[in-house]
Image 1 (cartoon, rainbow, N blue to C red):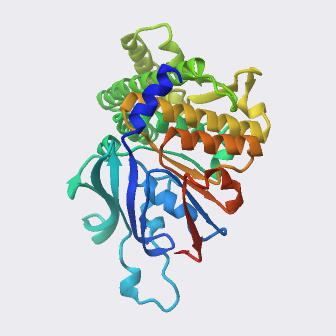
Image 2 (image 1 turned 90 degrees about the vertical axis):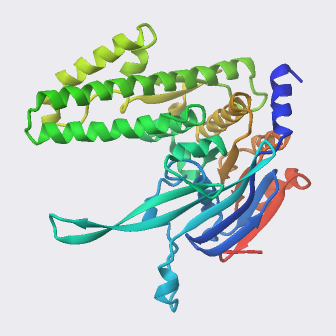
Image 3 (image 1 turned 180 degrees about the vertical axis):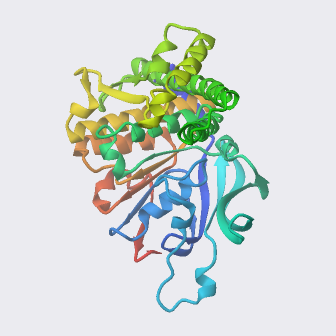
Length: 401
């Protein structure tokens, strides 16, 4: 065992993960409570039984909108025929006892509705927001969650990650960055907010030069910080893959295809920031005809099958899934080394498109890392290799059997 793997093993001796999970009015669950071990947890059941909903609930213990990217109101359980209106009006919530390096914390998140008077419409409107508590104390910044629990997920929708538009790949990369840079999520959200303001101001015909310059300067500053964080994460993963080549899954090479990111290869950050500011100013007229402006919100995350020097989008479906797993495994180990505690893996139907050798290899690697991984499947026979190392749960009609 080399030094890196020895260090990872030392960190994972101190358990990290979800010890108890409680759902209330969440998706198809009126209530659900699970007592779990820090080990692979295999959830089986027919399609529609609620397997993915459990993984989504855990993903809400981390910053963001969960593994489905759902709106808050969409998560609420749909009431069944004959249920009282009082029951159906209850807000959803997720609560958990979590371990981080053997120390226990309580984390909870829930939907909260509040009313606000609209003076222009002479009406009262209801809004939804997500509240978060750690050890019973309400927090104002979701990023604080990253200090206690981290999650990496793979869903069936990600089987097409390397095909189609750039936005899903960019979002996937940014989630990898969040685990190392807790401010990255706030920066990306603020950038998008400023970008929308900028576009609306230009399309409205207003020419407040001071306001425009202020927005452009703030966008450039945030944009360069976002690009720098992405570059650092790409370098971290590429270095790890170079030092720790996998024996089963294909080694990957990761790149960023973005103007600002590429400029940082050869120019100091302040110079790139000045360029970005002036570039946005030059693009003002283009906004009148379309919303496309090059920048960090258009960057593409490129993945290559290193041995073949082939872009992921040209690889077979099975190869693409194997490349995705390679990134996840590298990210998991990098997080353990960097943060000192293991992330929780949320693997929804992860064995789809993997041959038997790669499927068993993935399960062996998860077991050997001594981490908590929540794995869903309709085929329990695929997990014989974890028979004595995992906790098995079976769902039927939304109930634990």
